[in-house]
Amino acid sequence: MRIRLIYPKWPKLEHQTEFHLPPHGPVVFAATVPEEHDLRFTDEHLEPIDFEEDVDLVCISMMLTCQSPRGWEIGDRFRDRGVPVIFGGIGTMLHADQTQEHADSVFLGEAEGRFSQVLEDLQKGQMKARYDYLDNPAPVETVETARRDILKRNLYNYRGVQMVDLVHASRGCRFNCYPCCVRYLGGRKFRPRPIDEVVAEIESIPNNRLFLVDNSLAQNKQWELDLFKALEPLQRSIISHPIEDDDEVLEAAAKAGAWYIYQAVFDTSDYIRNRIQRYRDHGIAVEGTILLGLDEHDEDYIKRLMDFLLEVKLDLAEFTILTPFPHTRSFDDMDKQGRITTKDWTKYTCGQTVFKPAKMSPEKLEEMYHWAWDTFYKEESHALRMGRLLKRVMRKEEKLGIKDRFKSVETYQRFGRPA
Ligand code: SF4
Image (cartoon, rainbow, N blue to C red; front, side, top):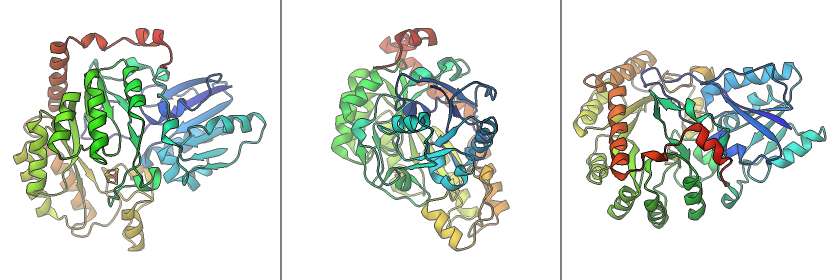
């Protein structure tokens, strides 16, 4: 069967340096498609979609709410030609009913061990309108090495510099943070992959720079220690979400090549100040993720927060506006309170205000959001700071003599599909 897998384009945050990472959802999904099928991939951020292509099935992988309306347009255009269209991914799970209106089928949940049945159903003319595994996650041991061979790797660079590859060592999250939908998507239970499989997957990636996209690594101290110890011999440079605030774990992470961490900065407490410093003490850089528009935020609060951010000297900062995504506690609360001002999902970019803030007007919140980006990056631009982080890792690679690990696309393709 000829299958075209499509990753629709979404609008990037206007203040961020524009670069594109290889998407993770599509390559993880591709590993669930039996090898006898001819699967090809289009990332619409980097290549146009051929709407006239002769294919047997279009699969649309959506991660974000603001990506969904474009995904629906793409689905409609293929369906107008009679090409069957199935949607999957996080964005599909968050907007299942609306997506259904643009789909022959909607796949909800984890596809491991399940997608061959969908293809068999399609071949028999019996594809179901909905495959719903949301309450029944796939056993994490069945997650295979993602199929990165479907990516055109030379397209994923920033000013000619190789970007990171995305990989995950676990699913689920034991926390339940206010604006987060991971509980709905991946379950409250932390589900680590077998560490030897994670190591084997990373060994198959011809890129020294990796982003461990696990929701949070700070879930189980012993698992974190085991993971970092197993990764140490591979000497990759690793970006990740938070790591346990524990000396032993931070030391193991640093030895394994922890490069920089995305750390939520949710207040101006000594706890956050020390947390940032402790990463630094272990040679790990910090990108602060700062959510603006929580109920306690007013103009003065945001200004005080900025003083704090400049004082603790974050390496990078990413500001976003609180956005009540469906299936989060923030959406349920605000919907009940009648505070959601639009359900035009194209505005759910985290750079626009789609609700009534408690202590500011929506316009003031947006003004403070732009002010935050401009103020933080006044002395040094985002691009310059990002370049500095990249240089740091390039120097390390040179010292270790591992820059040859950056194989060209052609070399990678000669390797074929990773084992
Ligand atoms: S924000 Fe992170 S730590 Fe909190 S529930 Fe979501 S994934 Fe877990």
